[in-house]
Image (cartoon, rainbow, N blue to C red; front, side, top):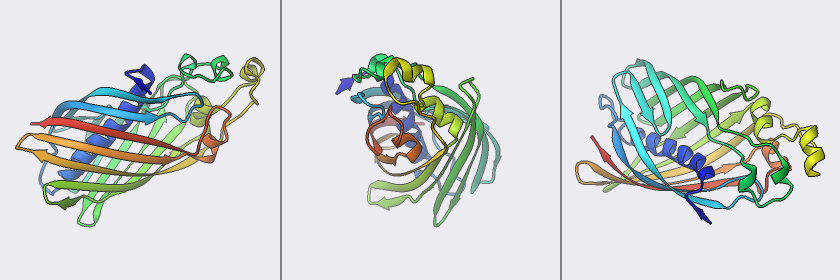
Length: 258
């Protein structure tokens, strides 16, 4: 287990997004605006890349909710429409995956090229109803890493249980072939250097399940715990760069809302 490694920053962005989403869902009553918050989280994630350890990382939590602009767990949004039940916004955020060859213990993967974080931009929608919350986004890669499209759709249902709000959710993430190939494909040159088989990744769909628990600690403080399991798509599982068929992520956080 490694503490504070740079590659774990992707885990921080992933679960801070879940943390921000959970805070918004827990305050999803009509007419009530989400609160801005500051705090600290500890995130743990097991990367799908072979030879990567489970990483544990302290990450600052910064969520800002303005009239038009918002910053939620690493994503920046501009609200186009909001009638208290439905919000439509423009969105920019990083694609939470990267590969650094020096961070793997696998000797063959050490011969491959690095894969960096990608910038994504697109649109997002969230609809709140008595039966739960639906949210989704469609994003395009805009940082010159081969292009590609990512989309995400999720359903969640906040359940008050005394002082704790439980928010179970299920969702699905889509990544196009261009995006998957950048992160999990192996070129002919890399295959020759490493001895791994050449691999061109196709598009893929990855379902996930998560649960978030929020416990208010007075008027301003909130403790949060989140768990997520993502089932890797066949395009990712079949890559010589990966091991296993799922990815788990966990988070503990303490935030101050205002």
